[in-house]
Image (cartoon, rainbow, N blue to C red; front, side, top):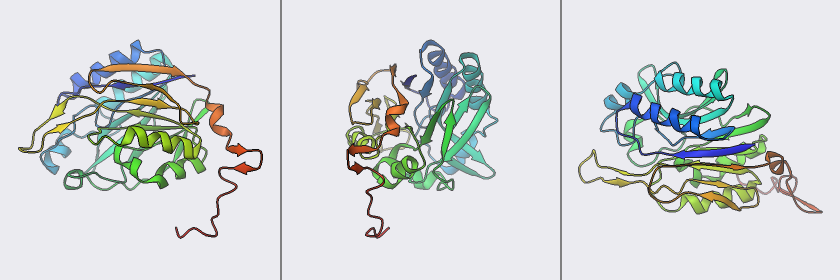
Length: 262
């Protein structure tokens, strides 16, 4: 299969424009699975909870609808980060969309910095979904620093971990190499570029460097640190089913759960 990402530069609050731009790029990319950044449709730096609620959407909203149309048209799967409206709450979420529409939603468990002032803490489990014949898991941005997230997904059989992101710290791209290697899974990190300073004195510059990593830790593709970009690589998801490290060592069977504190 071909799996890839779209590295975007969203314009804050201009949902239709951001969604249409992403949909156009999806249609132009030769990929069976496409990952979009965190909060791809709204932009990142909200000034208040009220603003986030105003710009958030449900899975019946504009972003989900237009991406569902693209997924149906191309017979593909899409993972996209979005501001999710749920009653009076807003979540930093990601959705998996297939040719028949939204398959599942994950709400970010580990909120970063001022996100704690804006979004409700995620309350969904770390689940694995079928995307065609492949098992896919979702995590969002700062989840990378908690190895339990990717391990939980891998133990459930995830072959590809999709990570919508708005990275401002430099560590994640290298860390995701380790997350792929220690779990023997593919990972796709879709980041954005550009900067935002909607809160005085808190300018954020997003580092780009979206990437696709193989189960052996090889970086199959890494984007530049600036500039909009779309890329896809041919991968064999079955490689992620092999957890043998040596003829007598298996990544999961050798885990000493009797000695683990957690």
